[in-house]
Length: 270
Image 1 (cartoon, rainbow, N blue to C red):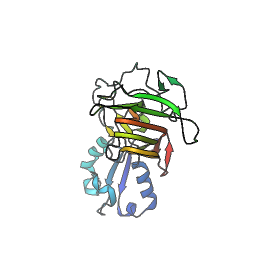
Image 2 (cartoon, rainbow, N blue to C red):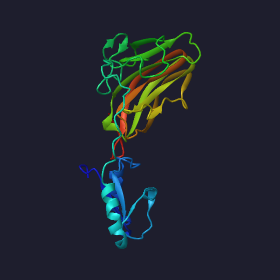
Image 3 (tube, one colour):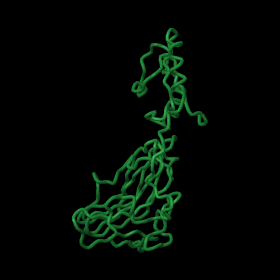
Image 4 (cartoon, rainbow, N blue to C red):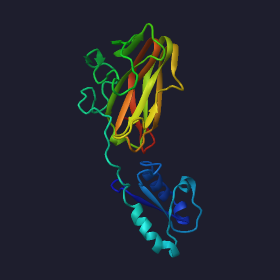
C-alpha cells in the first residue's frame, strides 16, 4: 500500500462488513482525504448502499452488466492528474535567509544580523510588513532556562505590523495536517499578536493561511501556549511559520514547535 500510487476501493456488502477492508480504506485515504490526486478509486461491485464518507465521491459502476463500458473509465482514473504548465514561482531561490527545515525554534542558537539564526523579518514574503519594530533575543525570565524572541514597538501607526518568520521546503507535508505551537507573552499590547502558518505552492501563494486573527492575543498576558493548525493542500511546496505583532507594546515568543498528525493518530515533531 505504501508503494502504490492508486488504491481501488471495492465497495460491496462484504467490504462494508469487513473490519480489515475498513482499515485499509481509512489508512490509504488519510494520505489524500479529499482525493485531489486520485489516490483512491471507488469501485461499486453490487447494489449495497454506500456507507460513510465514501458517499461523497464519484465511483465507477462495476456491476456485471456495466463492466465493459466502464473499463475505459477505470483505466483513465488510474492515471495521475495532468500537471499544469510551470509558472513563475514566488520563491527567491538565491535568498540566503531560507532554510532547508525548521531550525532554532527555541531561539537559543546564534544571532545573525540581529535575528535568531534561521529567522528573518518577512520582507519579500509578507505584504506590507514593517521593519521598524525592535527585535531582540533575550534571556527567558521567571527562572526558566534559555532565551526567547522579543518584539517591541512604543508607538505604531494604524495597521502597522511586524513579522518574524522561517520559510522552508514542505513537499513532504503536502496533504497532511500540521500544527504550529508556541509560547507567547504580551505586555501592554495595543493591537494584537499571534502565531501564523502559511502554505505556498510553486505557482500560487496562500494555499492555506491562519494567523490567529480570530483568536489573537492582546493586552497584557502571562506566558501561555497557543497554536494554529490545518490541513495543507496537496499543491504545497513551501511552508512559512512565524509570529506576527500588530500595533504597539511588547510581545515575547518561545518554544516554537511544528508537528504533523500521523496515521497512528498522534502528533509527531517535524
